[in-house]
Structures are given as structure tokens and as C-alpha cells.
Image (cartoon, rainbow, N blue to C red):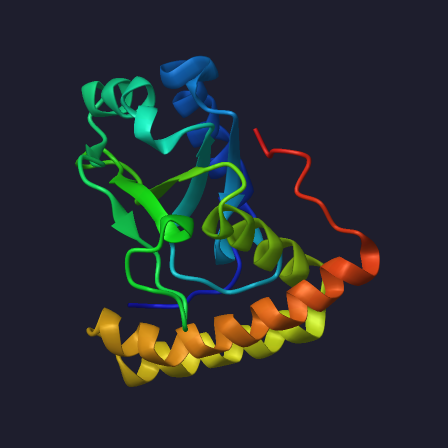
Length: 189
């Protein structure tokens, strides 16, 4: 599990993936956003493009997941739950579907979430805060590199070091959002 230097190609790769997804799902997706570390210019990351697809109702996700599966995307048949400290394991605010790229294609994680839910907002808020906060971005990258060095083959170990920092980033991002009146109005694609 390598954390590599920021790659400008990540933005272009996201755009290509987002166009493909939009062509497949049409208006079933309210918005398609580049999230995660590859969405933050200057931030080193694992070479995985994270995409958030926002739906109006996750219980009606078949209109989106069926065309994606027909195109070779994998998984997305059962609900999963994002982890967030102090929140029950199956809280509706953390519910999502998760899909992977078709076999043999560029590594992509599709996070399918419902508009207005905590996890949908969280991904956008943390991304935008890190984009606007070079100091926090640099510190976060250092931590990710240390976690990857310590747990090169253990994703659970890597996440055990990374997730508490993401919670702290979320707290700082929430204060920042209040100060500037942040709203996740514009989708990336």
C-alpha cells in the first residue's frame, strides 16, 4: 500500500471516469464528485480514484447500480456503512453502496450515497477543507505516509492510524465551514 506524490493526471482520470459513469447512469445520479485524497491538489495518496455518486434515495439505487454492473463494475449489491466514531454501526446517516472498477481497469472506488446524509456531506467537506488548508493537507500526508510504512500490507492497520486524524480534520473542517458559509453546491461532474 504505497502513498505516492500527488499526480496531476488524477483530475483528468476522474473526469474520464465521471463522464463514463454519467453516460451509463444518466439522471439517476444527482451529482458525481471526485473525493478522497486524489481529489486534493498537492496531497499524496494511494493511486485509487474515489468517486462519490449522490442519489436522491438510496433505496432506489437499482436505476444506477444495474447499468454500472452491466458495464462490468463490481459489488454494490448490499448496503455498507461508513465508520464514524460515536455513531452506531448501522446508522442510516452512514449507509452507502460501494462498487469497484471493472476487472483489469484503472483502480476506482465508487461510493454511492444519499443526498443530505452525513457521509455524503462529510466526503465533500473534508475534501474542500483540505483543498483550502495547505498546512492541514501537508500534515495529513505525512501521517498517511507513516501509516503506509508501518502497515504496508495491512489495510486495517493503516486505517486504524488514519481514521482518528480524519475525525480531527472533520472537526476543523466543520468550524471552517461555519466561518465561510460553506455549502456543497457544485458537483465535479
